[in-house]
Length: 334
Image (cartoon, rainbow, N blue to C red):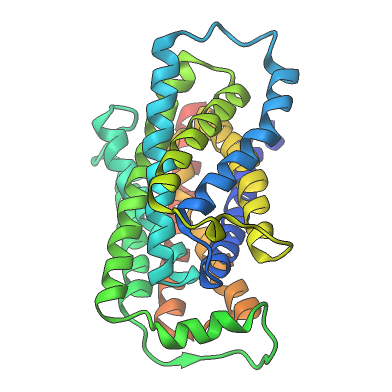
């Protein structure tokens, strides 16, 4: 019984660790010149090729009949939550850093919470201790994200001279995360996360209509592959921008396609089914913590006082949310 209770927490820890890797590898791929729309198409195509045989083998006999209405719901879910979200995210990441990308994902709990309330998938009892703790936790989450995004303060660099790619550090110096480009990047990142939040919430309804999680994930990847190809071919006409070699571009596509889209999307569907979309969104600060540490070690990104202060604020939020979840489980058992 205790193992089944802990399992969702272990799964979301794996999910956020994978997303931290996505922030880092995507940023490096874009810094070396990969087009964001082409990147999205390749990663979704890789995910489809990876998932299709597995989904057919595992769920072909047990999957319910796929109606046109259900497929249309899956297609539109893919359009909003994957194709549009990832294309906006790719453009935004060019203006910002991997750490800032992870920081802005902390808007997910607030947006998902509001959308879940709108769809009546969540409710808050402000007269109860659990409801008050949840609201305070969301406020701390946004405060931590805002601290990291808008306050830099004194900075420090780890005493390391060799990083994953030297071009990344030069890019940050040429395009510092300030001014008009930085504001544009933050706005686009928040817009991408809003689409992502909508995807988390609506996916719960889609899974009720089509409960085969693996096939549903595969259909989303297939739909987004077609959609992403249309977007990419309309925006990118130079054949050289479509070329992949044995370099960090191919590594990023393979990782984001197979591990992030292929594996993590299925894990997210499982968590949403077991614990709801808000629980998954509440764990996004973990990706920020991991990204801050790994981006400093591997990419040589500068750690600012704002990042440390924001991390501590978010850590407090995680503690409050953990207590709220424990309290909810206690009342449920009673």
